[in-house]
Image (tube, rainbow, N blue to C red; front, side, top):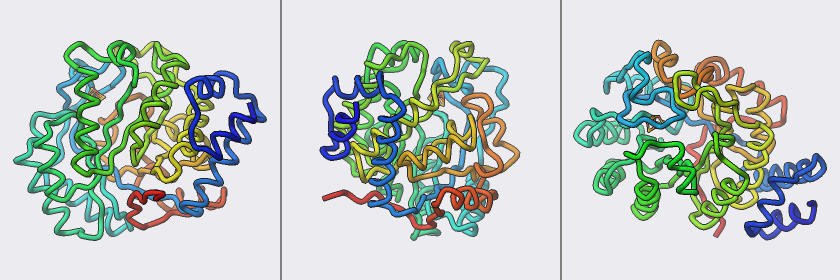
Length: 347
Ligand code: SF4
């Protein structure tokens, strides 16, 4: 097992069998070695800096019905909201004052988030904050829409692939959603020039080690600039709500593996990890993650963006909790970086 870890650390690549053995049979010794190398690689690329991104959840309306998601269309018990441009710009203003230099606009696939509305909004953000990066996480859109948003000033886009396995993807989504379209969207984002984020949940019902290996191989091939990996956390008002949460340990192991596979990638220690325990989020950083995304949304809507139950949005997960976050990071030898933190290639 240690030999596999050594190979991944030095060659940044394994074959399917190597990843499968690592994921299935990683004992504590191998896990510690994996973590040591992942932390070293992150240190050599980013030092002890952890980038912060201000997350603004712009709308919890969604036309989709993903089986795992608490804000899916058919959950009638969600209190729906849609931020106005003024609320979004005010969140940016607040975030800028706190030191954020990346704003992430995240939302469900809301029919009201048209190009006609978003393009002027992104242009305004870009004009007001030319020293900031604008990241979008607004789901599947057309090529022309992605291009217009890119031209307006957005430079990063997060679109988790969710499952490299088409069969698993189809188990997690209704027939109205297409694995092919998901992959096409990611390719288009990359072609347009976005710094593009992929990723998946760990421990979703029906997911096997082989599925995770497929995820790793896909990301090894597509080399995303950002990778979001978090444990599955059930939401009781969804079809998958009775399944147990994913494993923190397996999630941490995957963060280590992705750090070694893609040394320059921007990898968040996700809110899902923080929601299980603040310790787990710090462990994510110790496993090579280098991004945290505190919540900048107006506090009165944060509880309504429950994609899973118990989602952390206050304390160190909130923009106003940066001091707590900074103290927690300092305890493990890391510090907040207020830089924009663009992706920089190894080459
Ligand atoms: S995961 Fe995204 S696309 Fe799916 S229902 Fe939730 S918000 Fe909508």
